[in-house]
Length: 112
Image (cartoon, rainbow, N blue to C red; front, top):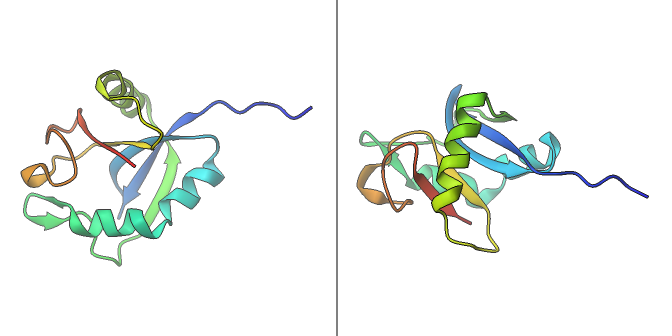
């Protein structure tokens, strides 16, 4: 019998800056998501303060979420609509509601 892994909240840092939180079953899975082409495309097309979130060169790194990031994810997930997709909660303010319903850091979410 294999143990059931419950999702944990992880954070992706772009160039050392905490940018988005999401749930994954393990750090390995979180790292795989971090390297997914669709996520890089989303980061490159989203802007914060007029600049792209990702320039295509900065290091993307997944890590366990810190307590405040987990709380932010929890608050945002309460308002999210049920979906089969992944819930991404942005920790940075996004310009012009590009990938989120709301540009406030605590509620900037995207379902993937």
